[in-house]
Image 1 (cartoon, rainbow, N blue to C red):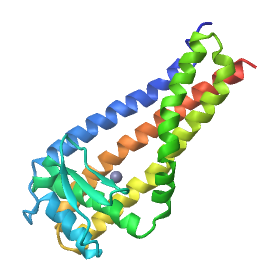
Image 2 (image 1 turned 135 degrees about the horizontal axis):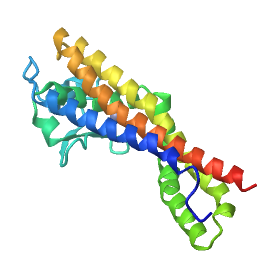
Image 3 (image 1 turned 90 degrees about the vertical axis):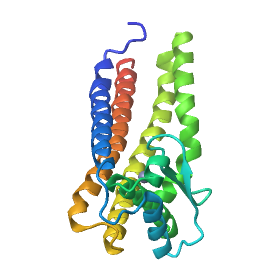
Image 4 (image 1 turned 30 degrees about the horizontal axis):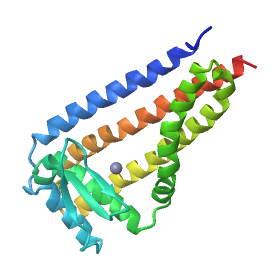
Length: 227
Ligand SMILES: [Zn+2]
């Protein structure tokens, strides 16, 4: 039967959902990048306000190149905002900036899922490279069935990492919206836009998880058939 599994079609729903999530994020983010927020506040200023109100006065808010490269670095304890969101005064800019500040608030509050996710980064990085190497070696040596067990273990680590990422992402967005409204940085009629941008971003993480789980299922079905 060669190396094409009879369950190859399992990857299609994940691919379609992933494409839809990317399209949705680009269209929603694109739309709300063109809508200015009423306060005329930049993403950098909004992040600063959220951090300061949590007592994180010394945490730097840095500008970073690229599009939607915004992130919180827990090892450096610093925020990195893409140029568009750092300087932008749109609803999307303050939404994304506050979301990244939300991760800093999680860190300060010792939010459990964030710490589990941080602890899993090294082994997940290893698994992400190793599963492909081992699968290729298995194909090359004609021993893929014997190697499927280890591939399944490595892929389970990747899927578990993507699973723990979901509560971390949704909780950061929840904290972001809470702080933006509490601090009066966002008006009542701007809530919907912020929510739409953050939900679209979260959907890409859901798509990544679905894709991995279906790929894992494919390996499990292949292993089961070869018994
Ligand atoms: Zn996030």
